[in-house]
Image (cartoon, rainbow over all chains, first blue to last red; front, side, top):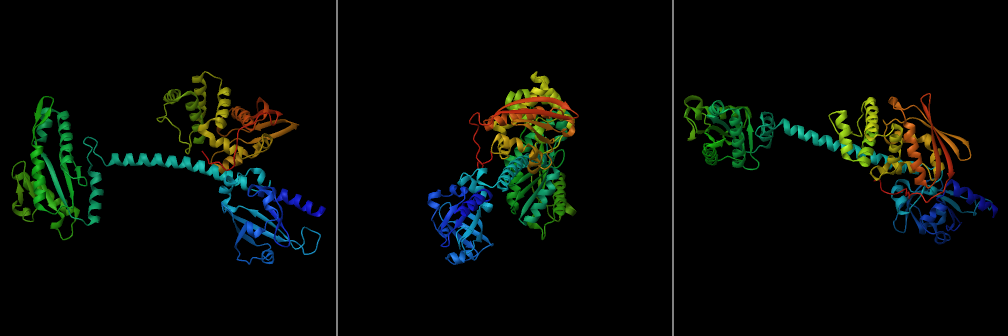
Length: 342
Length: 198
């Protein structure tokens, strides 16, 4: 009997989560850490395979089968909730009396990767692990890395926010808040890739130079801001207004292939832009010329070509006096015809 | 200097003395930003300037400020992760003292580019120790004061009663004497291995 108590004492220190099994596979002794899983009284006398299911390797239900796994890595699962997954290794004890229960076995258990939940589920403390066990160091590392990752994540979020703000600024005209020329290239590229119909409108303000010259730049800026608001109000949510230059704008209408609707929009825009704009007790009077083109008029829409054609239409519109809209037509290259609304 | 150190100094000032004090300090430093990023690196000189300015603004000797930072580091709820990570080093205060030698390595394991001065525990007799603090990287002086504040607060945390004495600096090394009067003087604060990190 002295022998067994020496063995138990050694094992309690070296591997606090061990069990000593009798020849019949019943638990004769359990290491102190196992008390956290089940009270000692319940453990002693319990069949090992009733406490834990051997998931791998696949073995039969007898103690002989269990002893046969000696030295192998056992994948185990607690049969009672919370059904924790465990790892284990078994050492068969000699058949003759002398060292532990004859024909029995020693099984050392550990939590493996489930240890993070297990310390919480079973309120484990560092006393439940052998002094040489690295589990507490691992828990430290998990917590330290999570804290470091959280800080890293916060930094990434802040950088991401700054990046979005910088991009927004780079693609936005600061005076009007409209998209700028740089943004236009991206939008056009997306448009062509989407293979959907769209209409392009080149819009130049008429008499804007006179406002700037006679009433000053403040009045000019005011007019541009007013005009920008007005155009944004006139378009639908997924359409775009771009300020490409001083008093030059490009409007893009998604899914638009109807010349009549395009002409109506242009007519409305011009009418609204011709309303006098009050500034410091005076009135700024402007108008707009518009040249437009529709992607559905092309076999394969090419952005550069369409922009060029919209420009031709715009010059045709200007030719006819101010406040006109012309939709591009191939004849415009020669004689300055085309559908128009003045 | 690692941004985490500047960030801790910042948190200490903000959590203890308020945002306005911090804003005033950053305004005077005129760096073009108001908060330190814990995951970036800053010039060492900046940390020295920052600490000197804080001492002036708070009208306190620098060693006292440093010791307060050590206390803050392991007691304020806003930085509770630090205290938890330190408690992983030992079951009781003596074990904690014995683990101090590992502290720079432990820190490196968590944040690989955070380099702390070396720490060495010397045992002179029963319950009589000294902690030798090596030269701080970047020529920051007075890390020993931070250690003093930290040890005092960790002793409270473990419920131990200690007497600490900062013995000063020699050859770039600082020495803090630790006399352990009682290991289980008070209850100490709770520590659970499996608690969620805050």
